[in-house]
Structure formats: structure tokens, C-alpha cells
Image 1: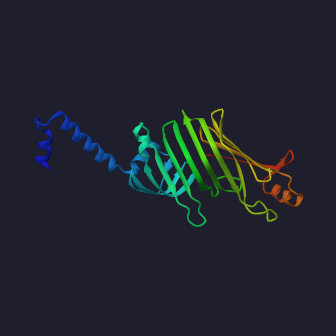
Image 2: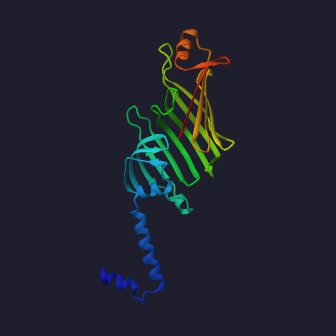
Image 3: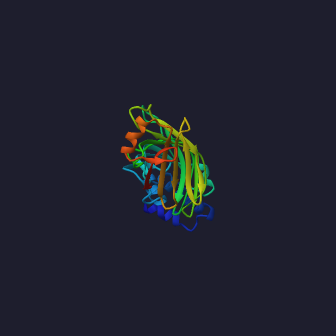
Length: 246
């Protein structure tokens, strides 16, 4: 090892040779850089995981969470093309398995800014949607660009899957709508298949979110139990509001 360092420091090396050796050393460092450190530097406190294995080029992340959203166990790697223009962008992917739908997304971020695109699949919510009995969030060609903590551009579809609200109602209901920015917040108005179910989801720049669920045209035998569960009368129907923070 001492002889090698003496060779590198030898003044007889040309400038080109020294530059080549430095580039090789840098590439070796990048090739073995742990994904765990990359995630910690890119989004401290916003992205958490139980365990991270592998390098930025091939990693496995267990129990990944982005804010309050649980993504589960995913494969991840750094995307090469964005890196060539100076943006460190990570691709995460979770294949579908049994009842667990597939999920995939590309994302980059830092202090006060974030960029997501090609987000597709579903994310389970558990009890993460407050009083609204939602089981999952779905995404189709979703993209989001935030700058200085504010929503600058958003698009694609977002869906909310509701568990059956009553024994007299059919199975899960999926509400879908387009994502857009509204006064710095991410806003998604969603409608169910019959047009009588509506959800208005708004996520503020500071991470606070609010979801208003409104149901119209329900018979009395379904409405009455829902009022006992916390729903309140609305024009043309009943509704409930949930709030939280990502």
C-alpha cells in the first residue's frame, strides 16, 4: 500500500494520468456508495426505513415510508440519465404480490423542493386517513413538482379506495380525480363511479392535509347509521371531514 501511494505521488506522473487516477477513485466511490446514506442526505426525517441494503445502484429498502405513506419493501436504484444533468433521482419499485398491488415511482428531493413523476400503483393507508374509512391511495401517471415548499406543478390521476361504509352498501368504492396545484397546495377532487360519492383532498405546503367526503342519494336505512358514526348532514347528502399531517 505504501509503495502504491508513493507511485501516485510521484512527480513524474503526467497531469492526464493524475486526472485519470482521480476520476477512477471517484467512480469507485460512487459505485459503492451506500443507499442508506444517500437517502439520509436527500430527505432527512421525511424518508424513513427499517433497513436499507446495497448501494445507490442496486438496493433493497424495507418498510419504506415517505412522510405518513407506507410504501413497504421496495427495490431502488439511482437513475443514470437524470444524474448526467446534475439531478440525483431514485427509482423505487414494488412488484405486486397476492393482494398487494404493484407500485413504482421516480423521485428526487432536497430541502424545500421535490420532484416526483411516473408514479403508478397503490399505497395502503391502514388507519392513516383519520375518520374516513379509506384503505388505499392509487396513482396513475401522477407527477408533482414542489419548489420552496409549494406545489408548482401536478398532474395525473389520484384515487382513494373506500372500505364498505355499511353492510347495506356494496364492496369497496374507488373515487378518482385529476391532481393539480391550487394556491401552493396539492388539490385533488375525486368522484366515485355513480357520481354521488365525492372526496376533496387538499395538501398544504406545510404538510397539513384535509379530506372532505360527501355522499349523496343514500337511503335512510344507510344514512342513519352513518350519522351515528360521525357523518353530518350536507346539502343533498351527508359528509365527514378528516385532517392530519404528512
